[in-house]
Length: 469
Image (cartoon, rainbow, N blue to C red; front, side, top):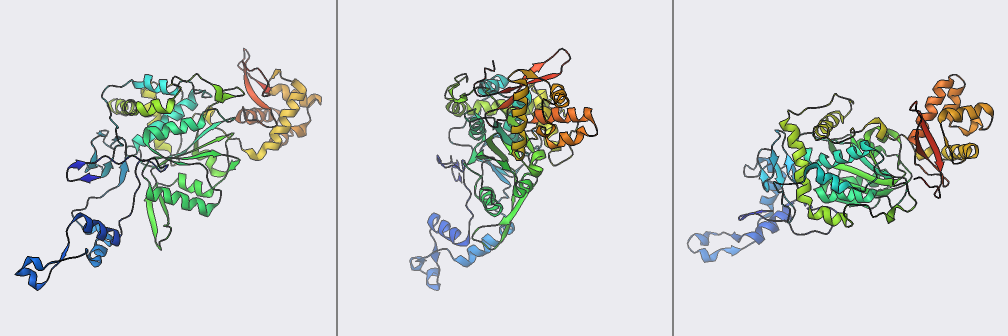
């Protein structure tokens, strides 16, 4: 991309693999490249006295093989750590915004065609305008999404790995794929319409993405059922990915500095992914959410594409504002691989005045579809006792004592606790319901129905015909 005349814009690309693909330079490829770019001749003794005796030739393969097998010995080659397609914040807090190779960070900045980062931008008001109309369950889920928007700009400030971003909704048409698309438009992304559940195939898919693409956001769209994957467990907690390259007899280590995202209706995660995921959940609370027209811009993807430079400038301003303020960070809340990421991003969000908290406990979902039968039985029992009226967890426990609800219609863990600790059983049932709110089974779900003067939460069973307003 860097010619003798300076930076050359990458060609337009309609592929789903992002703004630029990476191709490895083998010996034969290097021979062909040099032979096309330069006039190569084979010299002989006669050439010394008569240059016209030089014979046109191909660049010798044996020389190319020496080059491609030991590139670190060639002083004229510059080390390349990563490619970025948007400005990025260096570890020192300065911004890499000049196209080309950056000697300080060893990054190559290849801005997409037409990308201009203006000095003037709308700040947080522009971000709010972009997200207007998305029915985030609460401010914490909205903060989680803004944190995801910031993350690709922080790859030098906060080295990987990063948590999995799960964008979910209780039903189709809610806008989850649109949110994921915004991430890819702003930063450049790799899109896959499905994720294979075969571990070996998934490893190949991940390896191909890391080995041949450069966009920082990767999306697996419209997952269903329960996602349990030791491969994803390992990927999300690894700053470096190692695997055998397809068609080659070698293992290769690749940096894993991507933001991995998934979308789905009633998303459910199993295994270690539950605690390695940050949730972004939206819920329009209507039967046909695809008919909504309350977005600030009806052609939101087109608007984001048009205002992309300003959106990036607003996000960068959030980061530089945090750096100028002395990089304030919230107290450490986790000691796993994502602890530093959460402290830094939380500090940026707090300094920018974003409502809600990153990865707050009220945005964490523990539910898994493996208990779908239990949830369906429970919903049917509660509807039988309370109809569509609102109720409290303690009233459900009283109904069990009165015989109006059978103990076997409660989840197994709660039934077990009832034998020893009635108060503990009530709390356990409350958490169980909280984690499954808005999850539909057999055309029933539970939704928040407010609180009483003692701030005790009410719930209500709803059906697709229920007027929830």
